[in-house]
Structures are given as structure tokens and as C-alpha cells.
Image (cartoon, rainbow, N blue to C red):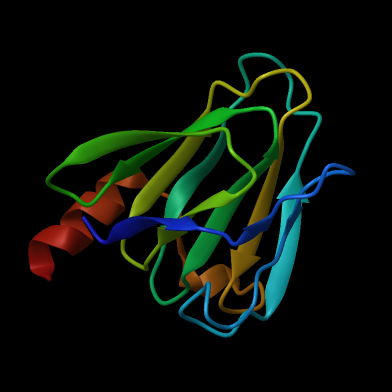
Length: 132
């Protein structure tokens, strides 16, 4: 599966830690940053894949699970450390579930929003993986 947990440099300090995302951390230039927060108990986010776009997800606060599917295998990755990010390349279905109270998910994306880049139907996604 074309995903990877990436360590984000952490500068430890008694006054509080600092993590920095620079060019050498994410293997793409980002064009969009957004974040999810105040997700109600039991709610799910995601539920799509991208044709071209890559994303880097970080649990800035709290925790949540990222359920990934490449059309053949499914894997669940828990995110709960602000110094680790999940790199998701294109062609991977993702669903975000089990948000803890106060969870914040930061997403760094390789491109601006473009609806045509989204595959929002799981059956369509599975069919596209069979063609590839």
C-alpha cells in the first residue's frame, strides 16, 4: 500500500515542544492546508480517494483512525502523535473514524481543491483499481 508514517522533527524544550514541517519532511510541494475539528462523536470524514493529489495527515490534538484501502488490502492506522504524519499517495481510499474529543486533524495537500480529482464512490474506486 502506498502510504508511510513520517516522523516530523521535534525540538524538545522544557517550555513546550516544537515540530517543523519543511521541504525535507513531505515529498511534495503543498498547495493547500486545512484542518478538521469539532467532529461529533461517531461521525466519519473522508470517504474518498484522489486521482492525482497526495496528502499528509497529522493528529495535532487527540486521536483518530485512518482506514485505508488500495483496492486489494485494507489497513487501519491510528494517528495520535503531533510529531508523526501519515503520507497518503494518490489512488488510496481513506476514511477517518473514531475521533476523540478535541481531536484536530491537519491535512497538507499537494494541490488546491478540484472536485474532478475526487473519487467519492467506493464501488467506482474498486472498479478503477481493477482497470489499473
